[in-house]
Length: 160
Image (tube, rainbow, N blue to C red; front, side, top):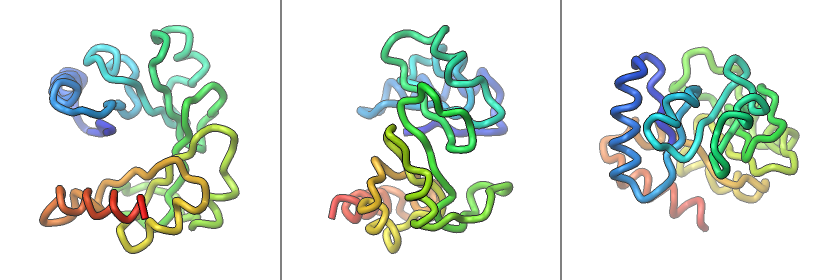
């Protein structure tokens, strides 16, 4: 689970992060903010091209701390890379043009890759076949009237 609240202040992020860490049985990753991730006991951080570089973070985070990086960042030393947007998305107002499944394949490296952007139950099946380690979804879950059912449907479609 990634905590991504771009407009929230650090105190709010830490409070929300602590709640997620305490209440979820899955690792919590904080978007952009390694300081917040460390403060709330999250499993890791996901950084972009404008954030602290992965190599610099490795010097200050504890062993086992997960660091993911967007494909447009320096991914050297990252545990995984986020690649996208795969499909057009409404979740990020300044998202670059969608790269499609073939574009995703072109960015694959030796580290696990997570597909992001515009992913729904209708288009998730082909992504697993590309070698994607996972998917990241916002509107495909939270843009529905039943987020829990949408998450389950995505999980089931991914596992087919």
